[in-house]
Amino acid sequence: MPSWCEVDLGHAVRQLKQEPGEGLWVGGVTLPLALANLGLIDEYEFLVQPVLAGHGPTLLAGLREHIQLELVDRHEFRSGAVALRYRPTRVAA
Image (tube, rainbow, N blue to C red):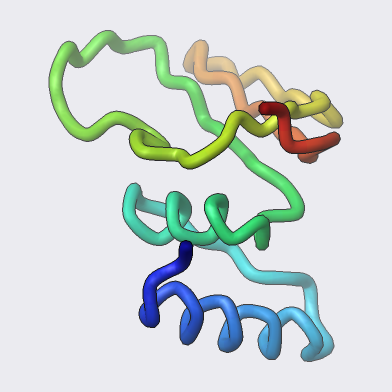
């Protein structure tokens, strides 16, 4: 069950998505997790750097349900980094 913060967040983001423009971009750990749990992310873009850190926050740790993704675009940079763009296809149990 969503918390009152998630309900307010969900309402605000739904309103913003109705506005004209190119869309909303978010980053970090906490906000994307809350939006993913509310089913409000239309696309995910991951930038993979060729560095192993071995510490730090885990991306989308605590996600309530699995989300099946479909690769829609990829871009490789000279640095070795790769940008991967996905769209959710369905929520998997």
